[in-house]
Length: 203
Image 1 (cartoon, rainbow, N blue to C red):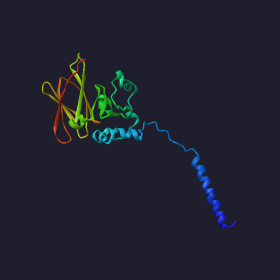
Image 2: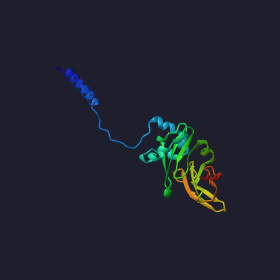
Image 3: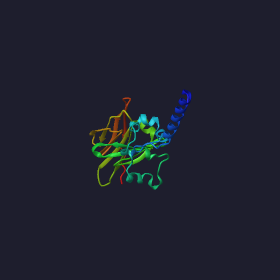
Image 4: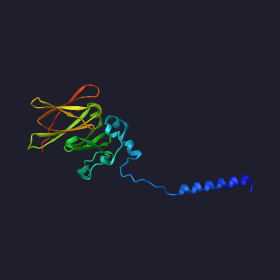
């Protein structure tokens, strides 16, 4: 057999071996962290990720909404259009606990140790902070929860007697228990001062 025939035989053998190797199963490492598909990542939207940076970081197991919370989402038929609980992010509120936020079509939904709800994204984009509240008729204490856009580092809560309390914003959110709040104010990313009157729902 001449050299050309030997070389051709070797090349053919290498091609066959390569093809067989490609058919062999490869080992995979199990990853239990929820990963968003490309379509889900796109649904978060660049505008949202730039506005509320918790959505810019990769989603992990800790970001998943607990079963008890998830069961309440949309209960009573009030699920909002385009709600994507599978894209939720966990908000660390320090000693006051944790909250969860997830996108809906054109807005955000949230579940906190106090208020729950949804709002159009333009509200936090324009105002800088969206504040909600909950209370009990048997107590003067009001629980305030707010979601803030990037660049808002703290809010000031003015009480009915004129006293003011400063609350730090963490993970684009804050939670505070106060008595007789009147309004919440903050400095926006552009340096402007904004505020929102506290409306206290009684239950």
